[in-house]
Image (cartoon, rainbow over all chains, first blue to last red; front, side, top):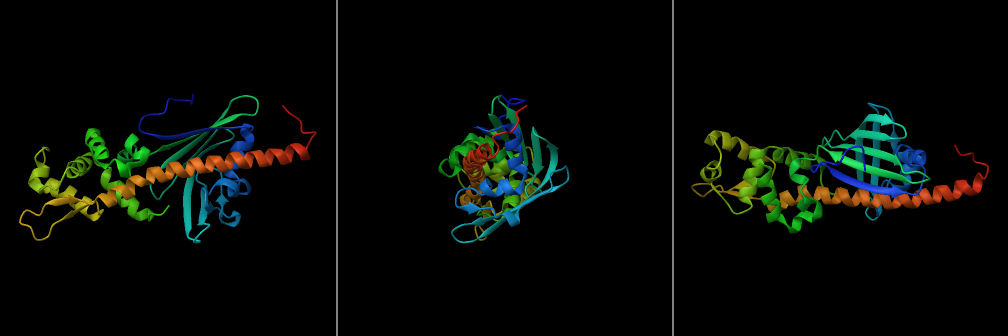
Length: 148
Length: 121
């Protein structure tokens, strides 16, 4: 139920949160919120490493730190669109991936967040790849061939 | 996040081209010479060689130095490394959502006890 049906060649992740849309949107652009969830499990995103300039052309920078070995993974993206509280679009100059976050008010205090990722090279969008490509390399190869 | 981003970029770029994807798909079934690889395409050998050079530079394929026909070989590990990006990416967003869910609960528990007179529109 997003604005447009996700194309077969996009990566899409959706989750419904029990919180008002304005709050969920702010979580995505305010370092004080981001630091609580931006790093996946086992990885922290320390507050002082997060810089968000939420306007078109502004940078979105974080450093994710591995809790176990301390290795650091800097990330950098540039905002293309900032439409509070509905839509955020940013591009990672490093790999060209464009991420669109859509915040949909479901009424009450429920908000649906959809993450669309585009510009992921076609070869990496296959269901096989998403399902864990390393175990299905031959099927993936067949998929590559079908892309033509 | 375990893969050097620049390396991944080179692999992505190498696979962005349909001819090169077809070559990779063919090599997944076994080693092949340049002539064998060129056969399904309406392409000149130099044209195919150009694509092979890109794939070679990306580390996706290697070519035997000593054999007469220098067969091309798919480096599966390199392809897996690139494709794992998707899997890792999915995991990151799933875990991020889990943490955000938790964070939103915490934040709202705090604000609802702190501001009982919060007005609602």
